[in-house]
Length: 279
Image 1 (cartoon, rainbow, N blue to C red):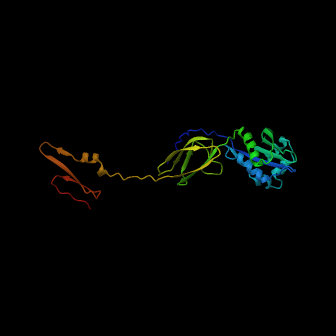
Image 2: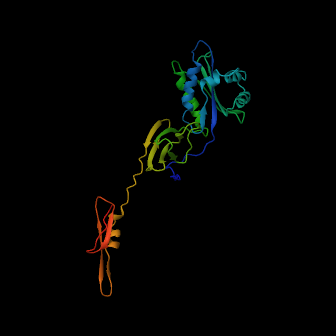
Image 3: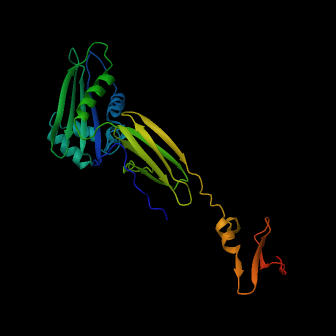
Protein backbone atom coordinates (compact mmCIF):
# COMPACT_ATOMS: atom_id res chain seq x y z
CA UNK A 1 0.00 0.00 0.00
CA UNK A 2 1.32 3.44 -0.89
CA UNK A 3 1.76 5.85 2.01
CA UNK A 4 1.33 9.43 0.71
CA UNK A 5 4.49 11.49 1.02
CA UNK A 6 3.60 15.09 1.84
CA UNK A 7 5.54 17.49 -0.35
CA UNK A 8 5.24 20.92 1.21
CA UNK A 9 3.73 23.55 -1.05
CA UNK A 10 5.72 26.57 -2.03
CA UNK A 11 2.99 28.61 -0.35
CA UNK A 12 1.54 27.94 3.08
CA UNK A 13 -2.20 27.53 3.55
CA UNK A 14 -3.02 27.97 7.25
CA UNK A 15 -5.81 26.09 8.97
CA UNK A 16 -8.77 28.44 9.47
CA UNK A 17 -11.86 27.29 11.39
CA UNK A 18 -14.90 26.92 9.14
CA UNK A 19 -17.49 29.62 9.80
CA UNK A 20 -20.90 30.12 8.23
CA UNK A 21 -21.95 33.56 7.02
CA UNK A 22 -25.52 34.84 6.78
CA UNK A 23 -26.03 37.64 4.24
CA UNK A 24 -28.81 39.95 5.38
CA UNK A 25 -29.85 42.59 2.82
CA UNK A 26 -32.71 44.95 3.60
CA UNK A 27 -34.26 47.79 1.59
CA UNK A 28 -36.04 50.87 2.89
CA UNK A 29 -38.29 51.91 -0.04
CA UNK A 30 -38.42 55.48 -1.23
CA UNK A 31 -38.53 57.74 -4.27
CA UNK A 32 -34.77 57.87 -4.81
CA UNK A 33 -34.10 54.37 -6.07
CA UNK A 34 -34.90 50.71 -5.78
CA UNK A 35 -33.14 47.38 -5.30
CA UNK A 36 -34.01 43.70 -5.36
CA UNK A 37 -33.16 41.63 -2.27
CA UNK A 38 -32.15 38.55 -4.24
CA UNK A 39 -29.88 40.60 -6.53
CA UNK A 40 -28.26 42.24 -3.50
CA UNK A 41 -27.71 38.83 -1.95
CA UNK A 42 -26.01 37.65 -5.15
CA UNK A 43 -23.66 40.67 -5.22
CA UNK A 44 -22.73 40.20 -1.58
CA UNK A 45 -22.19 36.48 -2.12
CA UNK A 46 -19.58 37.32 -4.75
CA UNK A 47 -17.77 39.49 -2.20
CA UNK A 48 -17.76 36.58 0.26
CA UNK A 49 -16.87 33.88 -2.26
CA UNK A 50 -13.56 32.01 -2.26
CA UNK A 51 -12.62 33.07 1.25
CA UNK A 52 -10.58 30.73 3.37
CA UNK A 53 -12.74 28.95 5.97
CA UNK A 54 -15.97 30.76 5.05
CA UNK A 55 -19.19 29.22 3.79
CA UNK A 56 -22.10 31.38 2.65
CA UNK A 57 -25.76 30.59 3.22
CA UNK A 58 -28.00 30.63 0.17
CA UNK A 59 -30.73 33.19 -0.43
CA UNK A 60 -33.43 30.61 0.30
CA UNK A 61 -31.84 29.66 3.62
CA UNK A 62 -32.07 33.26 4.77
CA UNK A 63 -35.21 34.63 3.10
CA UNK A 64 -37.47 31.63 2.41
CA UNK A 65 -36.88 28.49 4.50
CA UNK A 66 -38.50 27.91 7.88
CA UNK A 67 -41.72 28.91 9.61
CA UNK A 68 -40.02 32.17 10.57
CA UNK A 69 -37.17 33.07 8.26
CA UNK A 70 -33.82 34.23 9.60
CA UNK A 71 -34.31 37.51 7.76
CA UNK A 72 -37.62 38.08 9.55
CA UNK A 73 -36.05 37.39 12.93
CA UNK A 74 -33.23 39.85 12.20
CA UNK A 75 -35.66 42.57 11.10
CA UNK A 76 -37.27 42.56 14.54
CA UNK A 77 -33.87 43.47 16.01
CA UNK A 78 -33.65 46.78 14.19
CA UNK A 79 -30.12 48.18 14.60
CA UNK A 80 -29.29 46.14 17.72
CA UNK A 81 -26.29 43.92 16.80
CA UNK A 82 -26.55 41.91 20.02
CA UNK A 83 -30.14 40.94 19.19
CA UNK A 84 -29.12 40.02 15.63
CA UNK A 85 -26.22 37.95 16.97
CA UNK A 86 -28.57 35.97 19.24
CA UNK A 87 -30.88 35.21 16.32
CA UNK A 88 -27.96 34.09 14.17
CA UNK A 89 -26.50 31.96 16.95
CA UNK A 90 -29.78 30.06 17.32
CA UNK A 91 -29.64 29.27 13.60
CA UNK A 92 -26.02 28.05 13.66
CA UNK A 93 -24.24 31.04 12.13
CA UNK A 94 -20.94 32.54 13.24
CA UNK A 95 -21.00 35.72 11.14
CA UNK A 96 -23.64 38.02 9.68
CA UNK A 97 -23.26 40.55 6.88
CA UNK A 98 -26.06 43.11 7.24
CA UNK A 99 -26.69 45.60 4.44
CA UNK A 100 -29.44 48.23 4.67
CA UNK A 101 -30.17 50.42 1.65
CA UNK A 102 -32.30 53.47 2.40
CA UNK A 103 -34.00 54.96 -0.66
CA UNK A 104 -36.11 57.32 1.43
CA UNK A 105 -33.10 59.63 1.66
CA UNK A 106 -31.50 61.81 -0.98
CA UNK A 107 -28.87 60.73 -1.71
CA UNK A 108 -29.65 57.13 -0.70
CA UNK A 109 -27.54 55.72 2.13
CA UNK A 110 -26.09 52.22 2.37
CA UNK A 111 -25.07 50.80 5.74
CA UNK A 112 -22.87 47.69 5.72
CA UNK A 113 -22.12 45.94 9.03
CA UNK A 114 -20.29 42.71 9.86
CA UNK A 115 -21.75 40.96 12.91
CA UNK A 116 -19.55 38.73 15.08
CA UNK A 117 -22.01 36.27 16.60
CA UNK A 118 -19.72 35.09 19.41
CA UNK A 119 -18.87 38.62 20.50
CA UNK A 120 -22.43 39.86 20.02
CA UNK A 121 -21.42 43.07 18.26
CA UNK A 122 -20.39 44.60 14.95
CA UNK A 123 -16.72 44.05 14.12
CA UNK A 124 -16.94 46.65 11.38
CA UNK A 125 -19.45 49.10 9.95
CA UNK A 126 -19.47 51.60 7.11
CA UNK A 127 -22.08 54.10 5.86
CA UNK A 128 -21.80 55.42 2.31
CA UNK A 129 -23.84 57.59 -0.03
CA UNK A 130 -24.96 56.26 -3.40
CA UNK A 131 -24.17 58.52 -6.33
CA UNK A 132 -26.77 59.08 -9.02
CA UNK A 133 -26.78 56.16 -11.43
CA UNK A 134 -24.20 54.20 -9.40
CA UNK A 135 -24.80 50.40 -9.62
CA UNK A 136 -25.84 49.44 -6.12
CA UNK A 137 -24.70 45.84 -6.43
CA UNK A 138 -21.13 46.82 -7.22
CA UNK A 139 -21.01 49.36 -4.40
CA UNK A 140 -22.30 47.08 -1.66
CA UNK A 141 -19.98 44.27 -2.84
CA UNK A 142 -17.00 46.63 -2.68
CA UNK A 143 -17.80 47.80 0.85
CA UNK A 144 -18.51 44.25 2.03
CA UNK A 145 -15.17 43.07 0.61
CA UNK A 146 -13.34 45.74 2.60
CA UNK A 147 -14.96 44.54 5.84
CA UNK A 148 -14.37 40.85 5.09
CA UNK A 149 -10.72 41.53 4.22
CA UNK A 150 -10.24 42.61 7.84
CA UNK A 151 -11.26 39.16 9.11
CA UNK A 152 -9.19 35.97 9.08
CA UNK A 153 -11.18 34.87 6.02
CA UNK A 154 -8.86 36.18 3.32
CA UNK A 155 -9.83 35.81 -0.32
CA UNK A 156 -8.22 32.85 -2.03
CA UNK A 157 -8.46 30.94 -5.28
CA UNK A 158 -10.26 27.72 -6.08
CA UNK A 159 -8.59 24.55 -7.33
CA UNK A 160 -10.67 21.56 -8.44
CA UNK A 161 -8.59 18.41 -8.99
CA UNK A 162 -10.06 15.71 -11.23
CA UNK A 163 -8.18 12.42 -10.94
CA UNK A 164 -8.15 9.10 -12.75
CA UNK A 165 -8.43 6.61 -11.07
CA UNK A 166 -11.04 8.38 -9.00
CA UNK A 167 -9.87 6.86 -5.70
CA UNK A 168 -6.35 8.27 -6.05
CA UNK A 169 -4.77 10.06 -3.09
CA UNK A 170 -4.44 13.82 -3.60
CA UNK A 171 -1.94 15.84 -1.56
CA UNK A 172 -2.07 19.61 -2.07
CA UNK A 173 0.16 21.47 0.39
CA UNK A 174 -1.50 19.65 3.28
CA UNK A 175 -4.76 21.53 2.63
CA UNK A 176 -8.14 19.99 3.31
CA UNK A 177 -10.81 19.98 0.60
CA UNK A 178 -13.94 22.06 0.95
CA UNK A 179 -16.42 20.22 3.21
CA UNK A 180 -18.71 17.98 1.18
CA UNK A 181 -16.26 17.66 -1.72
CA UNK A 182 -13.48 15.20 -2.57
CA UNK A 183 -10.85 17.36 -4.26
CA UNK A 184 -12.18 20.93 -4.26
CA UNK A 185 -9.84 23.38 -2.49
CA UNK A 186 -9.83 27.07 -1.60
CA UNK A 187 -6.24 28.27 -1.14
CA UNK A 188 -4.46 31.53 -0.47
CA UNK A 189 -2.73 33.06 -3.50
CA UNK A 190 0.68 31.58 -4.28
CA UNK A 191 2.43 28.58 -5.80
CA UNK A 192 1.63 25.08 -4.58
CA UNK A 193 2.86 21.57 -5.21
CA UNK A 194 0.25 18.95 -6.10
CA UNK A 195 0.90 15.23 -5.77
CA UNK A 196 -1.42 12.42 -6.89
CA UNK A 197 -0.71 8.80 -5.90
CA UNK A 198 -2.29 5.40 -6.35
CA UNK A 199 -1.15 1.80 -5.87
CA UNK A 200 0.04 0.33 -9.15
CA UNK A 201 0.28 3.69 -10.91
CA UNK A 202 3.06 6.16 -11.60
CA UNK A 203 2.64 9.15 -9.27
CA UNK A 204 2.20 12.66 -10.70
CA UNK A 205 3.73 15.80 -9.17
CA UNK A 206 3.25 19.31 -10.52
CA UNK A 207 3.20 22.94 -9.42
CA UNK A 208 0.14 25.19 -9.47
CA UNK A 209 -0.29 28.96 -9.36
CA UNK A 210 -3.30 30.07 -7.32
CA UNK A 211 -4.71 33.56 -7.98
CA UNK A 212 -7.15 35.31 -5.64
CA UNK A 213 -10.71 35.30 -6.92
CA UNK A 214 -10.02 32.81 -9.72
CA UNK A 215 -10.95 29.14 -10.18
CA UNK A 216 -9.05 26.47 -12.06
CA UNK A 217 -9.62 22.80 -12.85
CA UNK A 218 -6.66 20.40 -12.91
CA UNK A 219 -7.10 17.01 -14.59
CA UNK A 220 -4.59 14.31 -13.62
CA UNK A 221 -4.66 10.87 -15.23
CA UNK A 222 -2.18 8.42 -13.76
CA UNK A 223 -0.50 5.78 -15.93
CA UNK A 224 -0.29 2.16 -14.75
CA UNK A 225 3.11 0.92 -13.69
CA UNK A 226 4.54 -1.41 -16.37
CA UNK A 227 6.64 -4.13 -14.80
CA UNK A 228 8.98 -5.58 -17.42
CA UNK A 229 9.54 -9.27 -16.89
CA UNK A 230 13.14 -9.72 -15.83
CA UNK A 231 14.58 -12.58 -17.89
CA UNK A 232 17.38 -14.40 -16.16
CA UNK A 233 18.97 -15.48 -19.42
CA UNK A 234 19.32 -11.84 -20.51
CA UNK A 235 21.58 -11.04 -17.56
CA UNK A 236 25.33 -10.89 -18.24
CA UNK A 237 25.92 -11.96 -14.64
CA UNK A 238 24.05 -15.18 -15.31
CA UNK A 239 26.24 -16.10 -18.29
CA UNK A 240 29.37 -15.11 -16.47
CA UNK A 241 28.48 -17.46 -13.65
CA UNK A 242 27.64 -20.43 -15.86
CA UNK A 243 30.37 -20.09 -18.45
CA UNK A 244 32.63 -22.08 -16.16
CA UNK A 245 35.65 -24.21 -16.82
CA UNK A 246 36.33 -26.73 -14.09
CA UNK A 247 39.91 -27.84 -14.09
CA UNK A 248 40.75 -31.02 -12.19
CA UNK A 249 44.07 -32.62 -11.48
CA UNK A 250 44.15 -34.67 -14.68
CA UNK A 251 41.04 -33.78 -16.63
CA UNK A 252 39.15 -30.68 -17.57
CA UNK A 253 35.39 -30.54 -17.82
CA UNK A 254 33.81 -27.75 -19.77
CA UNK A 255 30.20 -26.94 -18.96
CA UNK A 256 28.39 -25.70 -22.03
CA UNK A 257 25.15 -23.75 -21.70
CA UNK A 258 22.89 -23.43 -24.71
CA UNK A 259 19.82 -21.23 -24.90
CA UNK A 260 17.04 -21.08 -27.42
CA UNK A 261 16.26 -17.36 -27.90
CA UNK A 262 12.55 -17.98 -28.37
CA UNK A 263 12.30 -20.15 -25.27
CA UNK A 264 13.06 -19.84 -21.59
CA UNK A 265 14.53 -23.36 -21.62
CA UNK A 266 18.23 -23.91 -20.86
CA UNK A 267 20.36 -26.96 -21.66
CA UNK A 268 23.43 -27.47 -19.52
CA UNK A 269 25.87 -30.31 -20.12
CA UNK A 270 29.48 -31.32 -20.71
CA UNK A 271 31.08 -30.30 -23.97
CA UNK A 272 30.41 -32.91 -26.61
CA UNK A 273 27.97 -34.72 -24.35
CA UNK A 274 24.26 -35.28 -24.85
CA UNK A 275 21.64 -32.74 -23.85
CA UNK A 276 18.21 -33.87 -22.90
CA UNK A 277 16.71 -30.94 -24.77
CA UNK A 278 13.66 -28.93 -23.87
CA UNK A 279 10.14 -30.29 -23.78
